[in-house]
Image (cartoon, rainbow, N blue to C red; front, side, top):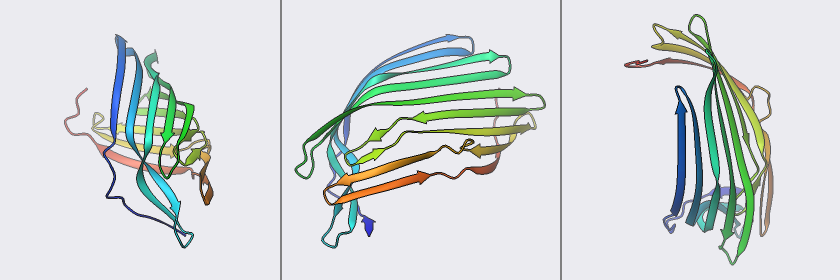
Length: 212
């Protein structure tokens, strides 16, 4: 009922970017901020149509242009000697102008994302890390995706002066990585629900030329 194909007629996608950055440090702590404006031309996105046999054909297309204007801030702080936290926030206005298949539509939305990372060093070369993440709803030329929250937890054990590390990771601790997506265009209306499964993984790593 659906298939994907390439597009040899794509035009290059170009972005004009204006960015202003600030960074201040206090020992191991820091504060970084940025304001930006990005204008993208010949914007490339996946685009779906219905063929003569009522199948959904998806291909990359130059759908129009977009503007992203806003800012972000990130700070890293040592709360206690063994507890370090990093908080990153991003908020911007996203404007999408779709000009394909006789369409001339203009949409604007505010987009935000948040990440809060906490790292705790424990005795005997153990370490804990908890990541909390949020992504707000988003749009493309045909798609509407819900916002969602998720978190990851890891326990790390170092060996041989931390050259070797064994890490246990629990993905999506609170089982909240669930969101919906709607693809809507002429002759097509598809609703998809994503329900990510929590999983456990183990990683063994070795660092060459480990410098502290």
